[in-house]
Length: 373
Image (cartoon, helix red, strand yellow):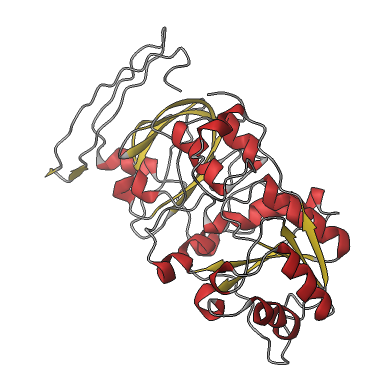
């Protein structure tokens, strides 16, 4: 962060867009980042000939193959807005039939959510069941997710080592379709429509219309409908920063929560974020327009925040990061975030070389170190 011994000088050079003798110059602002002894970065206007090199590694969605665990998701998954819904098959069965579902919102996929999946894996095939569309139903302000939609399967795959070698599968239900169900009707739907064998929930879980049902009622109803039910204790946040959370929140009992993850990102404490998530935070961006990606050399690139698919940390300088580009190996880098752009300085030269392509997208990941930045 800015307070961790780094002096960051900002020098903005503006270049007016102009077409001149066949060269496409793009308006851009480059922020010069310097520490105590780092020499200034030289910034030049980028012409068409350099942009052709800049985009050599842009790849189309059709050419991307499955990535190894820990890599970037498929580009096609980022273009698609389709959710994994638990729809009934033609024969009337649901993919979750016979499995054990963990119930929750699962916004951050943090260590508390992972604990639910671990418990589900101990008694059956683990699934996560959550709701989508709550913001639209209640008129809540839209906000970016903590985990990019196309990156959720990677995170769940990483949980396989905790879940007996089986990665939990996530299914989502449209909230509008179950909003008016009573607690009994909801459990009946789990049993009869989805055919689940059992459920796992946290001790503070509430369900049914106007959250009328609690954990004890879930146990009772599941027993009535012949399903196993397991209620687990909340995973508590032992970090001292927990005292900064709004104590007026009636749901705030000191447990690990998505609210705490958002708070940690808002203050830029990436060590705290990693503790809550159980992994480093990864930003995913999708650069669709070649004009959005700018660079001053083979080691520096910038792109607008509008390309981000999930929530970034506080504006500032982050020293120990890695950038993932296409199917390339991770490259160590430093990140500067301002109000409009993400600026990346990489340790290795030649990473920022791409072919010119108007219609292709660049999928790019930035992973923050678990240590203090």
